[in-house]
Structure formats: C-alpha cells, structure tokens
Figure 1 (spheres, rainbow, N blue to C red):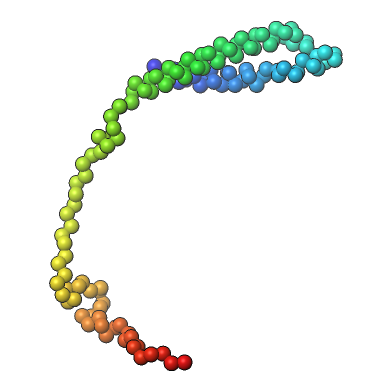
Figure 2: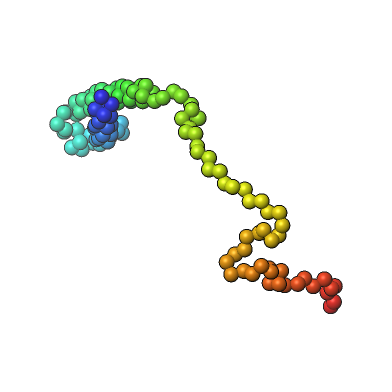
Length: 130
C-alpha cells in the first residue's frame, strides 16, 4: 500500500513540476497584444490558461493528500519507545589486572636486558656556564 502510494506521489510530483514549467507567466500576454503568434495556441488564447490552471490545482491537491497520507503511514509504522530501551546489554570482557610491586616486575620489550638504567643517559646537574 505504501509503495503504491509513494509511486503515485512521485508521478504526481513529476507531472506537477512539468505543468508548472509549461505555463506562461502573467506578463506573457503583452506579446499577444502586439501581434505576436503566441495567442494562437491549441486551446485558444485563454483556453490553455484555464485548463492548465485547473489541472495544476487538482494535481497540487492530490500531491498534498498523498503527502499527508504518507506522513500518517510513517507515524503508524514507527515504534513509540525510547532509543535507550533498545540498547542490547554488552558482554563485558574481564581483563586481568597486573600487580606491579617492584620495578623488576615491569615487562620488558624483546631484546632489552634486565638493566635498563645503563641505556639511559645521565643528567648533568652542574650549572651551565657561559
């Protein structure tokens, strides 16, 4: 039902845009007064304006009705619950805590020796002279 209504809505929209684009504006009648051939149309000099205007009004009404109906269907199909009600409980992964009691318990990188302090340069504590 919704798919058929949506398809009709899109078709009405495309036809409505096309009808609006082929209509003449209010200032287009000035050219007909000076002998232009624009007044010689299939529908006559005023027939096309009233036919296109009525068709546009009918299609606009259908467009609004299909829009309201689609909005009503979308409200009815949604769940009115909260987003937080749908959260699934997560499974917590326990990570064992490492108890580091002394500096020797610190894990070493591969290739490092047990004596890391020999690799660290000494800090010069003497005052700098200029």
